Image (tube, rainbow, N blue to C red):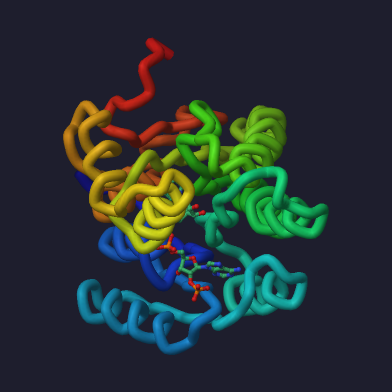
Length: 259
Ligand code: NAP
């Protein structure tokens, strides 16, 4: 299917590896010029080169911390009027809430709630004025089914989810959709770190925890970043203009509820 977004521009943060990179690649495969943001410049350049090589589209990079005002300004200077915005940053550290100080909560809110809101604020009015916009926030399945050791993520992302639910209803009449894409377990560095933390906290091996997580997923496997990226590209497609304000769960059916 032609997604109808060839020639569009996209700003993708948290894009040097994992789910963010897969979203950038899938958009580039549709002919979208992408601007990638991440902190580690070497990894970012490698990701950009890989996408250029695979697609031939224009790929720009911004080595910056997207959770800072300066990082957001650099990203927006490189891609001031994106047609597509994919917000992403690293997830907060796992742990026991008794060990978290106010600063930990503020860092989580900055990364997983306030940064997406700031990027939306800077771009959504231009999208509405131009009559096309697609915003996808990478959040987490933990928004629907909280994971005990990811309390910082559960809390911060729920705040973003509530905000987006309100805003999306005011943009769609101008063909600007805002949706959240909720990853369940996807085979990335982040998942490996989460499994390590779960193993450490329960006194078991990484392999034992991984086997347990695999066994309880109806698909019997972790998702691939490519599957995630392709779904993101569809949400950003010309055809998805009526798909708005949703929390799209990608978890192999692990969430047991009907809705
Ligand atoms: P990942 O493999 O660790 O990749 C994270 C990406 O974000 C990297 O490119 C990283 O590059 C970049 N990044 C992190 N902090 C950043 C910052 N402050 N500014 C700019 N870029 C930043 O993670 P992932 O698995 O793709 O996960 C993406 C998001 O989905 C995370 O928020 C994660 O918590 C969430 N999630 C993932 C899973 C899963 O199973 N994978 C499940 C639920 C939720 P640099 O470090 O170089 O900046």
